[in-house]
Image (cartoon, rainbow, N blue to C red; front, side, top):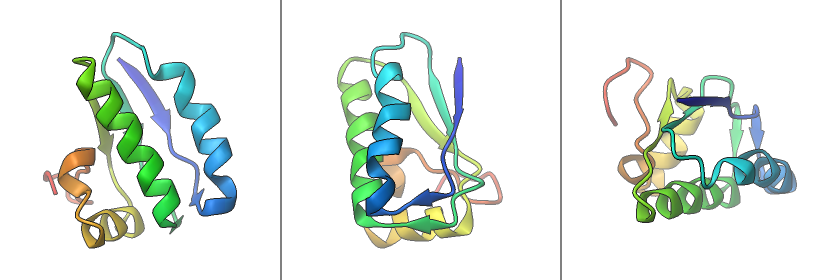
Amino acid sequence: MTQLSLQPDLGIEHVAELQAALLPHLDDEAPVQLAGDQVRRVHAAGLQLLHAFVRDRAAAGRSTTVTLASPTLADAARSLALAASLGVDSPSGEPA
């Protein structure tokens, strides 16, 4: 299993950094867990990139989840109805 920590700022000006961190793991055969506990700021562009990463891995039969989502990340994902597609856990550890 590959475990990565999401950066604290997923604002549009940091999407390139997020993409650079995720891209090497797009074809990982092992499940990927993205720890979201440090995320403090989110823009739609950051969520769109996360969604595309999870979607593309799922299309290839690969598992990806976001664990320990910060309240900021979980709220942003819910507001865009992406929580389920990202596999975002709520802060309590229960699936969103």
